[in-house]
Each structure stands twice: as structure tokens, then as C-alpha cells.
Amino acid sequence: MSGVRLESLCKSFGDITAVDNVDLTVADGEFVVLVGPSGCGKTTTLRMLAGLEDCSSGRIFIGDREVTDVHPKDRNIAMVFQSYALYPHKTVAQNLGFALKIAKRPRDEIERRIRDVAEILGIEDLLDRKPAKLSGGQRQRVAVGRAIIRNPEIFLFDEPLSNLDAKLRTTTRSELIKLHKRLNATMVYVTHDQVEAMTMGDRIVVMEGGLVQQIGTPLEIYDDPDNRFVAGFIGSPAMNFFRAQIVVDASGCEARFADASLKLPETHPSASRADVVLGVRPEHLVIAPEFKTGVQFQATIEAVEHLGAETLVELGLEGEALTMRAGRLENIAPDQSVRVGAQAEHVLVFDAADGRRLRPQNGAGP
Image (cartoon, rainbow, N blue to C red; front, top):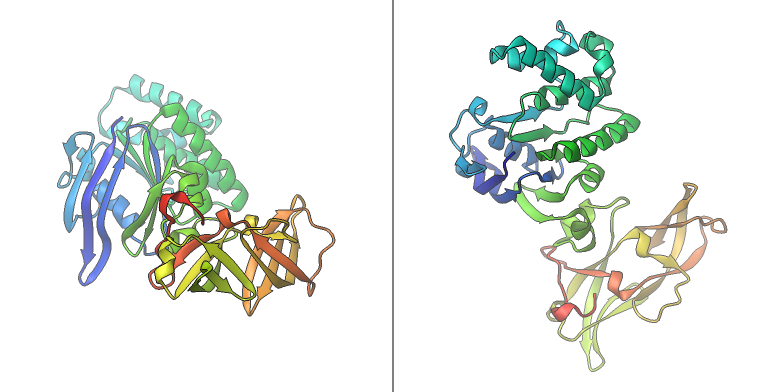
């Protein structure tokens, strides 16, 4: 296997910039997920890596070999698409072995590799069936098998689970994670589903507007987002945001909203601004807080979703809807007025104008 390196990769379609100066290094054996909303540039980036789209500028390396202008068939990559792209008139075994047959590999080698791949994917009993007699999950495994059998340097996945139902998506996702560990293969995976990104990737590349917004491990991205877009996109339910005014006086610096205030260090970068946006994850909001630092405010319960082990509570605060996620709550109901709060270390501060994260100096405070 080999790693991947993208250097200043750009792609434009006329006046529209789809991918803007992307730099990314994928280590040998790493599973990297490109995630973002539709139109963010993730699939275009993958297609340039595969050679299916020409680069407007920049360079692409697989291992130590530059492949920017190399034909797709000579890049030694395998791509699994959203559509299964199986030959309907061929059996599973024939679909799996087709690429080797075209390459004129010996028959005994083709049969051996078909058996090996079928065992890896648990589809030994499906080899004589045609795609029409397979479930969606089985077809997707066959599509993955066609990629594995070629023994490529890089595996590329373009939203391969989008056509599956929710339960099958979860099962297939687990199978792909296990497959990556078994093959120790280099994989680049594209999805718009942040749950897939969080559960599958060794690292996540969050994209928006053709730009890389942040690269990091799933927990790094979740706990320490670089901007408001990343904070709001990663996490379900999404992060809550509050517009706050900055007040600096003899007592120090505070971010104030509704009937609440958050003490900030005097050296905090927000001290030079008039407005900021505060962000709090739903699981960090608590009812009837007992802590002395952080933010506390009065809110109205508007809806309650009992999910068994946990409860989602929708709160109203001056016309804004907030979400709180907690353990099992039985004695709450809509229209109740409750005191809600969050610890200071769980409150993130963002620039109100451009959404940049405003981090404290020396790691002190929110």
C-alpha cells in the first residue's frame, strides 16, 4: 500500500471554484474521510485523485510517484461508487473476477483470488447468484470485493452507503471498519453523513465552499472545532449557538446574553469585539446547575423527546430554539420554566463576523 499527498489542489468550472487550494497528506494504511454538505468539493477532490477529473492546478502523489497527469487505469487505485455498478448479466464470481480476466491473469489465480475475497467479505454462498437476486448490502459487498481483488495501492469510496436503509447502513459501516483493519489499506472515503465520518475515519477532513475547514481526529474535530461551521456541522444534535455582547469594565470582560453572562479572561481575544457567538453542545447543558462558573439562564421547555436511555429537550430562549441532551428525565413537561446552564470550559467562543474560533491565550478559560 501507499500514502497520498495533495498539494495546492484546485478545480474550477468556468467562474465557479469547486476545490480551492487543498493540501492533504494521507499516511500509508490510514482511513481518511472527506465530509461536508452537498457542493462542498469533497467528491470533486476524490475524482481528481482518481483521475476522473483534471486538476486546474496543483499536484497529486500516490506514494512517491506524481500521478497528476497519469491516466486513471495507471494509478493503481480502486473506486467504489454510490451506485453498485455491477454487471447484471454476470454472476457474483464473474463480477469479482472481471478485472483480472481483462488483465489476462491465469484462470487458477482468478479463481483463488475470488475465493479469498469472498471469504473476506462473507459472500461465499453468493458466488453463483446474479445482482438481481442480491440485497442492497450484498451488492455493496460485491462492489467492494471488485475493488479488493485488484490489490490496489489506494481505495477510494464515493458515498458508498447512501443507497442503503438506516439499519443496513450501520451494519455495512461496521463491516468496512473491520475490512480496513484486516487489509491495513489506505482508504479515502467521501460522505455527507457526519455520523459516518465520526465512526469510520482515523482522521476527518471537513470541507465547505471548496475549502478545507479543519483536519483532525474525530474527537479533535468534535471537542476543538476551528470555526462555527465545523462546530455546527459535526455533532448530532447540533451545537447550540447564542449571540452575545461583550462588555469590558473595571470588573473584567463578560459575554452577556438574555439574563446570563460568561466571565472571560481580560486577555481573551473577544475583549476587542462588540459581539461574539457562544457555542454549547447539547450534552453540556444541564437543568438546575449547581456550579458557580459558566453560564446560567432561564428557559422554557417547548418539547420533550423520550428515547429510553436519554432524553432530548427543546428549550425556548428569547425566540431561539436550543437542544439539551441528558440522561433519562421523567419529571419534565412542555411549558415548564427551568434554570439551565453550562460549565465555563464547555462554552466555545466564535467571532460573530466570520465565525472563527476565538481561543483563550495559554488555554485559560472558554
